[in-house]
Amino acid sequence: MELYKIRILIYSYMKFEDKRMVKRITVFFVLLIISIIQVQAQHQEITEKPETYKGKQQSATDTSSILHAFKAGKFNGHFRYFFMATDNESGLTDYYANAIGGGLRFETARFHGFQMAVSGFYIFNIGSSDFTKNDSVTGQPNRYELALFDVEDPSNKNDLDRLEELYIKYSFRKSSVTFGRQLINTPLINLQDGRMRPTGVEGLMFEFNELRKTKIEGGILYAFSPRGTVKWYDPGKSIGIYPVGVNPDGTKSGYAGNINSKAVVLIGLTSAVSDKFKIQLWDFFTDNVFNTAMLQVDYTALQKNKSELFAAAQFIRQDAVDNGGNMDQQKTYFLKGGKSMTFGVKAGWKNKRWETSVNYNRITAHGRYLVPREWGRDPFFTFMPRERNDGLGNVHAVVGKMNYHFTKARIKTSLNAGYFKLPDVKDVTHNKYGLPSYLQMNADIRYHFSRLFQGLEAQVPVVGKKNMGETYGNKRFINNKVNLVQYNFVLNYHF
Image (spheres, rainbow, N blue to C red):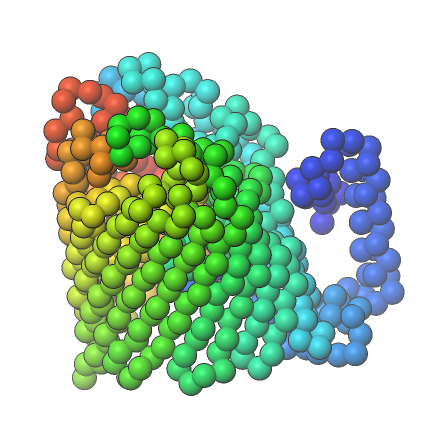
């Protein structure tokens, strides 16, 4: 690893203001690595394990030497280029961005069940719109492209680095416990990696796999580094880094920086109760803010032609905890005594090449469905990249999805189309961000290279959104929300 990369990682993590001290620590770190070597030569589904570094492996080696655990460890890398451009309605500002970055990951082999891992990533803005300038008509800032860099500092183009993983892991039989900074995927807290880097978390996570066809997982989290940021925050301070919308009474939400919450406790159970049925139970308790419980049942039926029929049902219930984050209800995240409910269903068919499904989701009028956008994306069957249904109540959504895999050509394609019937933009009780009803279509094509360029993947996602609701002649309900087409081109190289 080059000296300047190590310095960047140390500076990002330690936050020293004395750069001379950073240089001294960097030199010491490099000399330590050299000494060891000289002694002994040396935007996923949320149901899937994180694969930010796809080449990572877990070694079963377990010897009597800590040095051997380091020597037998694995280095992996990930380089990424991301172009994004949003074509808004005529008269509104269009934006574009070019981002490039890379990272390294090291994981030791096992030593008496223990492993350590560290990874970091850096990003450069190599030619983009001026994100410090808001739209001249609405006064609104950029929504999509800025999240490739630093949403808290639109002028930041160079100091974009983050220590993403730094943990120690203990494995026993089929189970494990991990403590430190890590990347996880759960229904509500997940990578949401549709930009340059995903959301990271810090805390204690466990996975218990000793029961037949059953997995129990969970933990306690005390820090987050949301997608599109370079810093780490306690749970309360992480809520409100993204736009906050309005309170249910129509006043601007004032919870940013005012939420008192020190931990998120999560627990999940996934069990194959039969060959056809799988059940998931999850609970997410956010200290002093809210609790979210989820139940999902999946059904799969194998057909004679090796295809599958599948269906699923999902139910989510949310309730405020204490005062919802702040005694002042103008500065709280979840209103005291508030609740929300949502349910969804899906049905489809798939084989080795095709997968098609019809999906429906309903958020009832009991209240707004609220999960911090800083933590992850919606777990709904109707989720489509580039939009959320967070902050909404009284919603009907219908989405059709179709995927086709050209196996010999190493090409994967997908086409999704959905209609989202939302409450009126002036119904602030159920519409936090003033988003009108809309039609959305997503097309995506991916190509996996081989031979000389093995490890390289190209992706071209295109998103279109059309307004289907009343906007009362106010462009603030249009800009960066509907009547837009967004173009993306992504290159990933994993080694």
